[in-house]
Image 1 (tube, rainbow, N blue to C red):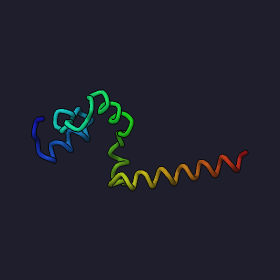
Image 2 (spheres, one colour):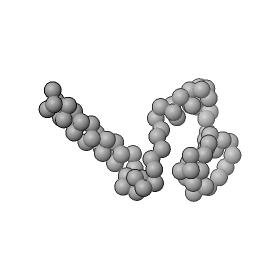
Image 3 (cartoon, rainbow, N blue to C red):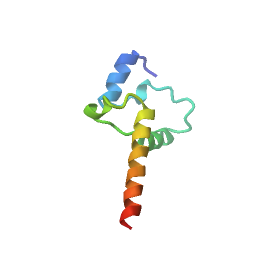
Length: 78
């Protein structure tokens, strides 16, 4: 595992670069498992949107609100 500063790591991550060489993967059963988890759980948010959502809770809260709106509209149109 290579070492870099947190700032360098964040920049690479934000730029969509592969950061796996900087992660401690000893507790992951296989690279395939890590890769599948990474694909499943991670999405890239554009910078202009990211400034409104400082953390994962704010993103999840906003998406839950959107889901409620969509469900309500779906029920109203049925």
